[in-house]
Image (cartoon, rainbow, N blue to C red):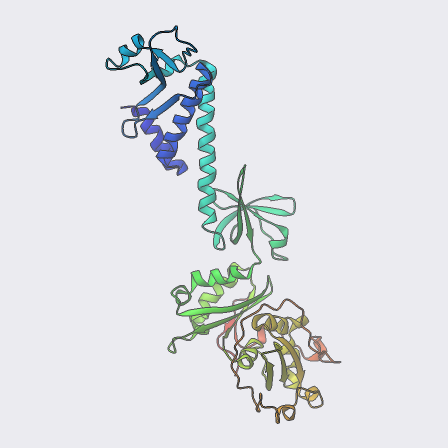
Length: 422
């Protein structure tokens, strides 16, 4: 038994995670290359390794002929009956005989070439193993260590490979330092001659989704479902959740006792605020929840046009719009509706915002009671509501500080509340 070879293969299999059969094939291929380099380019050269004992056999298949005087006699593919009989006494003319080749006969160059073939095969298999390992984690979250800066990009050590965090996938104003541990979302894994190229992100909305799936058992087992997510990285995220189990509060499950669950995710996102709302099939109710913590007087939603008109109390207008329109913008992305917001005073004379506009319309009563039969579509545009004088997010418009908001929200300072403001 070739003990040294078997021990070396065991070590390689454990360290590189390369199967033993692949290593055997690499050695056989290298031996064939060495034979051809030493004896010439012979197509009839074979190499076999016993998978149990590790014994190596190199041989050339030759055809037995009467003598060397036959026409077109080729010593690389033919052998005389006299010599063939020494290998196999029962050989007959025309039979194929295995002529063993001793590897000790190989020259230095042939041996070096065989070594290079083995090393190249091991490197290729190692790259393939790493590629398959991280390809299986594509669209998932992994923990990495900030390694070094590559211009404006950052190299993240993911264990057996490095991921590239491009500038476009970084959170604005988030400063990562070398040796710092950070969770990243694997966007794409590509196979290249130099090994797998792994692109990661800190801004993708599914980063928040995966973090909640890992933190909240009810989401992991399917009791609570995340229906939609709208995110402005580094600032705020709105997430709509739903549970078919009437005994489970989906918002409370995500927030956790004293906000422990949501706060751990906020910490991982470096203080990014998270609003968690209840999903509803009725678009009017969903839009009302999405604009939380602002109080809503009325919502007139048009499922066909994917648009909605919202009326809020005068003192809640700036809160509904949010700082720089963020609250309305995220609500539009979350629901897939174009939302137009007006205060009660503004709505009195504005077409489409008055109850009397819908009295004679069969599709609407005083409140929308239709069913939402569309699919969620992410809203990519900016908020397009009508901002009138004094109704913007400026401080003189009565904009409330974010820490004063009600609803399922957690901030960088660790404060949180649960449930939507009634």
